[in-house]
Length: 349
Image (cartoon, rainbow, N blue to C red):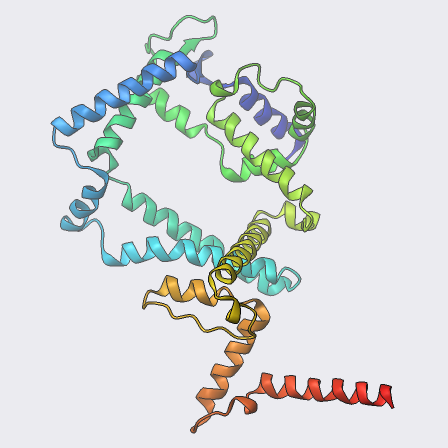
């Protein structure tokens, strides 16, 4: 993105409104609601929600049943909705771990883009009839109220919707929203980075209290804070990783998994009796749920997982009982222990 485009986007976000052309040379400003207007908008939502219940619209959990009954949703769709986010996370992690293997990394990136397209298609299918739900109906009423009461001519007078209807202006506002990729690029580069640095030293940011920040302003602040935390981390990734959203997501996933593993290991150690807490190997029983099995398995560090994998392979390839001393990792430990004893003996001679 060129610098001029970035300056434009920063200006739009800082202004707190969207400039919309309603006729040739005639513009209106779509403002975000202030605290008082937000209060009324939430009242509109609550009343619309109650009205939707009276009119027998569906609750969120009921709409899925209706979608299935009418052939708009299937078990395959449900599996995709559950599995694709997991595939996306695994792919991003693999990209980070393969960052120096350019061919593999870019092949993974190609798969990632296809998975994202499939996920977006599935989400659109799942939410295509949200207007039949109480929450969807109420949210639409709230958005319409905000557009009707927060859209003004550039001279400050309320817009009378002569040239464009409320729904048309709402559609223009929705189309003007920036993508996550844009927010992330703006948050980590100038000119915004300079503004953010001055703000951290106490300068005012948007000329309004935090409670009245617009959603774009909140989003940009959130991304900026995230990049601050990353740069201040003791294990901060390289600039190349930071500039690549997919690789950085992979780094964040890896950091999260490492943190979860450490916490899980600490909790396990605290729950074990003292007489077994410091043993080399501890076996924990789980139920049949996949997530329970994965949670226990993930308590192992990478070396331990490699040992488990090696042992399972040995057992599968052997048609008789396997003696522990014959396991590859145990043989290696015995060998190293023998070499260490020999060195100590020679040193003492």
